[in-house]
Image 1: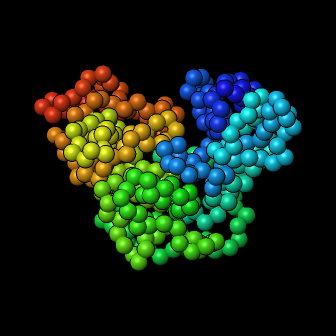
Image 2 (image 1 turned 135 degrees about the horizontal axis):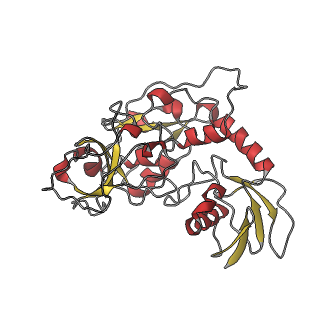
Image 3 (image 1 turned 90 degrees about the horizontal axis):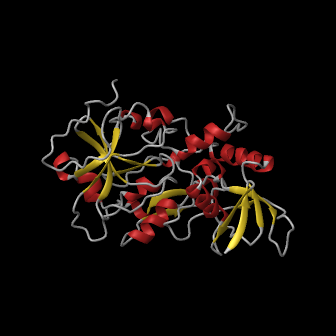
Length: 334
């Protein structure tokens, strides 16, 4: 075990733990310390090889270890730097980190279009959160924004390459949970983009998971496209006996009344998928009779999605297929 201090709070963590995961462990044991966890746009704990690309998780190591107490000369990516016994780290308390993070957010927004009013990711977008906390009202960028031609990658997933921040999450997802990846990063530098090879479509059984791992609105669900704003829907935990052996069938149903507008995988407090789901669960099962509804999903009160939800619905009752389901009763009134 190694002792690490993050923003003045000491904790023992297993050897080999990264600074980012150490901060997450600390927040899980002490929820009031959640604000001390560095943001992450490219790191995904369930995807091997992810991290080290977006630089939003930069932190300042003011003490390297007990054996070598010298501070690290530069800010380090917390998702790629492992803790050492006696290490001291500053995130929220470091003015240098906050200034660097503002610069990273400004860089991420250089080419990002002002699509929030029409983007299906609005309300769930990590870039929106970063922009709100660290962004500037004005831009110093004087050149024309980078744009890409619209490309059709299939009938289920919509690619908005103009919004992409090249986090590589969707590439790692396709590499690690599908039988064959047909998309990746092509070209270099300012021309780099997510694309399929020779304009193939993404049609494997788990292709929809690239939507859930995308931190921005670059990959969205065509079956949900422009149907509703996410904060106007009510999320419910549900499950079914999925015939795909790699899918547990544990999902979140996003509903308006008794209508299922979209189905997503369940995510933890860090916005990461708990278990990946198949396309049949995600795209084909949009009838209430297909699911056993467990009850309203607990939403962080700081999230815009939580506004006015579940005023009088019980979160303990499990609803079966034969149960009368009246979602609108007692829920938010528009």
